[in-house]
Length: 300
Ligand SMILES: NC(=O)c1ccc[n+]([C@@H]2O[C@H](COP(=O)([O-])OP(=O)(O)OC[C@H]3O[C@@H](n4cnc5c(N)ncnc54)[C@H](OP(=O)(O)O)[C@@H]3O)[C@@H](O)[C@H]2O)c1
Image (tube, rainbow, N blue to C red):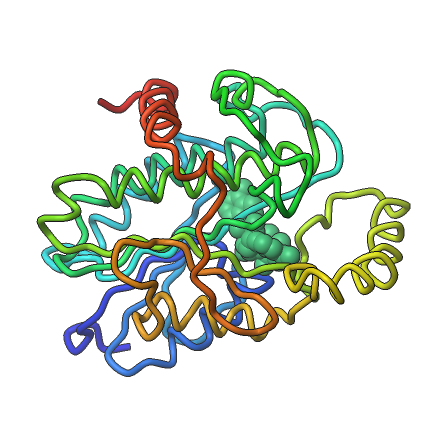
């Protein structure tokens, strides 16, 4: 696209597959919008005009290189919308990230924490930071979700699979709360949103799981979740198209939580604005995670 005519700059992770790819289609179709996507691998498929900058969230060096390159490419312009949607879920414990952290914690939380710290100074006043979380962070919805926060244990491999995933998604909401509480963010009227797409089918989340586990999950979806969905709307599975549509709407500012709230949760195809878990709202937990994450990634 002719970048001299671009009025709005969007930077996005997790736009190459699943619900993020649907969101990207919609965001990139907005007139006057320049989109820069961080993606791993060679030549991911993105809509025409979208720029791709290499990013592997399992490496903090890659996150820093991405932030530097985005800063260089944006130049004197500002980032209006930063969408941190990438995520992974595995059923087993992995080998650690290149930096020595548990991989799900490293990719889903730590890399995005560092990226948003590095890019926040480049954001426009009245901009928007959107972090994709999950209602699996909440013990009321996922019984094995964390009830306490111990960042060092998460960083060094406490639990695996869904437990590590739901903990990393708790970290996403805690981080969103911490950003929203910063004086700089308030003064510059940057809005911060933690977005839960809800149980979403047709994405590649969990693709690393063994064939047997994927078959078991499909079976659970078709039986237990279907019955559970009659009583708990959070268990009703939505489509990647609808989740992506809502992520785009939230990112573009067409849907926003009420004043004082930051959580947008997609339930049965509609945006809702519930409170996240009690732990996610704990100021002590927010501060602890912020401090320890800063030390882990080496920022002040
Ligand atoms: N599906 C659900 O039921 C559900 C529910 C609640 C929340 N969520 C959240 O929604 C978001 C999108 O999930 P999805 O279901 O659409 O999953 P998906 O289809 O697997 O998409 C995940 C995205 O993250 C990117 N990604 C993963 N690891 C990366 C890394 N190391 N470096 C750079 N990019 C990386 C992937 O890139 P590649 O194309 O390179 O793999 C892809 O673009 C995630 O944050 C997930 O936690 C999903």
